[in-house]
Image (tube, rainbow, N blue to C red; front, side, top):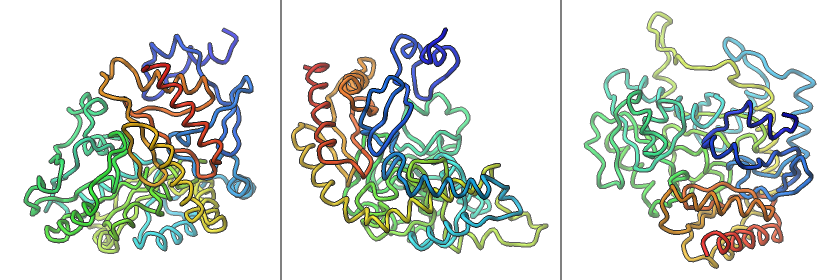
Length: 403
């Protein structure tokens, strides 16, 4: 058992992976990366066509973010956020408030926990007056138990149903219940990610905001995937001029460098937790790495890159380039710099999406399917030539696998 591949198979349990299949394939083991390119231990290069599961924004080893982490390391890597604060966490919170218009920031470590925090905040805000949650069919909000409860993808969530709380599930606004006892409605704004990159009808988010205003329910926006430019605007909610009551951020928050998440809340929600100690209105949630200095330093550098490199402005022609490439395939979806190509109505057991992605890897392109949907979501630094290479590999792989 000398090779890294053998040691991986012997010791490691990979996420969202059927390990029996993993044991018989030769894994791609990444050793380094630069820009939109990853390099394995044998020196083979791959284009990172899904931004390392939708996290990397400006490319690997971006000098500004790398330098910010190094400089922070020379000061301190981490200190507790319970009863203490730190410089980069304060500076980052100020930036996030300015970007979102939501005045309070609670830090956590990933998208699942950012949503978990939002769900707990909504429930404790109402203090028993409202306890019902509403979510949408095929929603995916993470893997912690509150987020799983809100999630609606049978394959991912059915096993854990005995541990979850009841949720009213709707497919469209017309199905919303009477709102008097609804604590909050959760939505992936503009586009559902793990559902296969399904777009919501234009105006739907704005109408949902209006329904929440009428009913008194809180609106929770899961911007874990859509945040930080993916839809062409900094946040998806901006497309319809909507400000949610709670917003979950993660993935691209640090530019894809370190695990860090944030849940942003209105002042009204924050104020509901203020009281005398004996009232026990404290928000009883946190973790050891809350407000981690390295993550916050990376996130601050990430936001500086947006400003200095005019990322959103420079992304516009690339969005059009993506649209042009997608037009060559029969069934596609696009939202900003998010692209999806649907292979067809194959059974999951046939693993057509997995087979196509393996064939793409052989051609030097890495991505991961959602069932029979191939996601193309590269870093913003991708070149026109690299984007062409991605779609050439996709077309050839579909021809090889599907015929």
